[in-house]
Image (tube, rainbow, N blue to C red):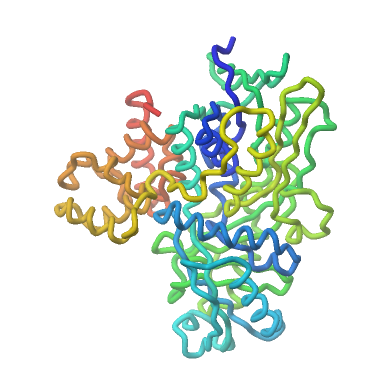
Length: 504
């Protein structure tokens, strides 16, 4: 039997689940979260890595969603400036695309729907003279620029989990929910796949399982309560950096969709995404050859140097669990969220989270807790807008000043090493560094900047349990390793992770 009744149990360790957990714990609620795999191991690490208003959503008249998302850019830039940064987007314009006047009007609206403090305004570009035109085909002589933000999506999720845990939440990874029932107004949840399952009780339950939302809901009750989702796969490819493409590019394809080409991890360009309907989550995490072809052909219409399929260094896809709104095309389905509160006489409340996007996770969390407030103790006051996330407390002088100070305090450690740590961990880079005075003090190098001490830190403080957790979600070091280096890194990391029990 469970020894404690939590106020709130959450199933799902993606952006929505961890965002709700952190917000709820900060209100004084007792919280437990279950994730069936690793944090951000589903859709939340397979996004296009953007905090954005959604320029194309204006075409579907989703003004409230765009306004909310634009406002959140500023909030999240303030909360986690090490994980989120402004990024200039270039829109090349040519024959057969949306009219220039329409684009200019849309960008004007995008500039003014919400207050901008850290985000520059849009501009018209003469691509024949602007450096942004150099990687493009010569027929693109005009265009526009605007700004959105880049985000390290998986690290943002892990940071939210850290925030939740430090405020008292209990985080269980590798713990799939296997049984869910209720009696006397209390939920009974059993989770885990080992010989010692975890059983807890909670006064309220949040189903934030993303693409698996319907499966979790099916454990709870009748088929009538299972939410209807539109599952849409979004695929991406990573290629060596397109020469000269130092900005992000928004590419308009003939079918009316847009594809992004984004600078990624210094040496690469990330190209995505697609909108491909799938029937189950299992279909959604591997790009198809047709989608790769679509992305390559779209890029070839704009960039002067063609991209060969054999140069693709990584492929990934995620499943968007969208609200089923009856839209004919997947690209037209709303990216807004819906909160379904299931409440029967005398029963404990269940809240199913459907849809949403990384940009608006904080607002979704506030809305979710507002729906559950009548059934829970604790403060109803919203608090997250002004609170820095762990590692984001740089003070008035900001990220650059912190990095300079870190370099002064560690003169014998290469500046690029310190910058990498600050970009991943913010002000908590000092916790990874510990008492290290030189690079050798961080232990043996593993590859792509990883050291033994960093892996141990991730094991003990960030729920890292497998080499993939370290190489692809807590960091992106795997992208910088060749086949032999990857094999050696995985072997070393596996030994370090198994060396001692986690302290998380």
